[in-house]
Each structure stands twice: as structure tokens, then as C-alpha cells.
Length: 360
Image (cartoon, rainbow, N blue to C red):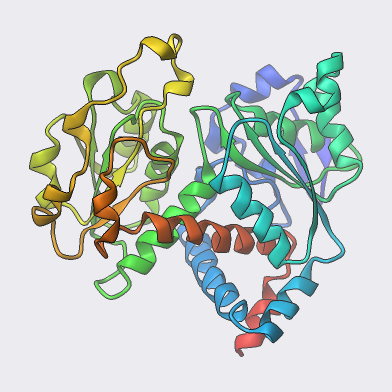
């Protein structure tokens, strides 16, 4: 059985069979005409794409500074509609996608819980997604179920109305657009010291269930001489699938529970919170772990150019006193998400050349 988009792509007999296929063997299914159609995995992004997205995000934020530029941006996709299907709590990802749509002139609909859709009446997830596709040109999904965004794209790509699906966070598995904005943040932070190549990055906290650090780890294969330090309690160590990926691509990494010894070595520290929402008994799980917190006192131990990142929301893991230090870039990181997601939507609809024309 085959599905005709612009090219012939194999379709498997059922979702379970397709889901079991290695990610690298099914990436073409989510592309069309040699470019991204659905954005599901961080593994879909190569170095050329990452560099072009960072450049495009810079161009968009430059245009948006003026009234005339903002008007040009808002005319690009004023004929398109988006559905923001966010049934897992979200602040930053939802607002950044919402404002990305606004910047490009898109009209948007939103559902923030399954109790407000016909799923409460027993409608299947597949039928719910197909209903959305009847009305909109893009679906952005944030869902607690691992693989849900991939399943939505798989369903729609077998219909006569496949619309692009963007994974806005898929359980504890992946968060590809967060990885994009993290690369953008790292690139902007290091643009005067050689870029991201050759840098040492510490990822700290709940690495087992932190989809942001998992997705960002996949992207390290696109850069030269990267070294990763996985700093976590034993119970929250990075899963073996990520470590196998890094070994396959010969990316150096170390695992430790000694945060203090790592701080002076690295160029970036990526803090994460304990992901209690994925605990079997969240009320009983310890979530403080002070030895994995970044405090004001630590500012004197890190390098002068070392940046501190966090996908937010934070709890105890970064003192608010750290916010005033110029190396704390998590608030810029948050805003970068809006620009990068705007760039991504621009790419999906193939109008990036109209933005580039403004700079030629």
C-alpha cells in the first residue's frame, strides 16, 4: 500500500507497525518535495537546515521591529488557519506558537483540553485530528502521550487532506521545536566566540524524562567537537537510547552526579526541573535535590562566557538572584522560541524567499 503526496512513500499496514520502525528509517514520510512537511522529531534537522532557520529567525525579528516590516510579515500567511491542540499544560510553547501565527497573519483556533472536544463523547483520537484538518491548514500538538503527534501526522498523511503537523511536545519523548530554539539561543550566545562547534555543554537535572534535553542531544551530531556532560541523580540519568545515538555519531559525553566539578569546564549549563508529571506516584517523589541547583554563589565558579539555560518553568533549580547575571539567558531563550517557531511555520508554507527578498 502506498500513499501519493508529491512522491511515493511506503505506508505500513497499521500504526503499531509504523511506530515500531526506527526513526531514521521513516523521516521521508514526513517530508514533501524535499522539504519538511510535518515536524515530529529533532532528527529531521540537519546542519544546513539549522543554519538557515537561525538566519531566517534573525531576518524575521529584524523585519518585525518596524511597522512596515511587521505589516509585510502579517500578509504572508493571512490566508491560512492554524489549530493549536494543547491538551497538556503549557505556557511558553502555546504563547510562542500563538504569537508566531499572529506575526504571520494566520488565524488560529485552540483546544486546551480533551473535555472541550468530542473525545469526551467517545470520539477516537484519529477522528478528532481529521476533524481539525477539515478546517485548518496547520495543526500544532502538545500532548502528554508519547508519539501522539507522530500518530496524528501518520493518520493525516493517508487522507485526501493531509495538513502539516508540528509536535509541540510529546510526552517525555521529544520536543523538536524547543531544540530548534535552544540551538538558536546557543548560536546567538556564541556568535562572537566561534559558534557552537567545539563547545562543552552540561545538561543538569531530570535527564531521563526531560524531552528538551533529549531533543537537543539529537542535534549535537550536526556540530563539530561537541562534549556533553550529563549531570543528574542516578534515578534521573539519561536513557540509553540517547547515549547509543551519541556513541553511534562519536559524540563525546560524560555522566556524573558531581555538578560542582563540571561547572568550571563548560560553555553552557542547561538546567531542567524534575518532571513530576510523569511520575507514577508524583506526590511521593522527592523533587528538591539541592546538589543539582544553580545558585548565586556558583556564578563565580563558571567561565565568563558560560551561559545558563532553562526551558522553563523552573521550580527550585535556579535561584532568582541568578536572573540578573548577563550569562543567564533563559528569558532570551524563551523569547527566541517565538522567532524560531515563526521561522519554522514560514518554512513549512514555503514563503521564506519572500522574507529573504527584503534583505537583497
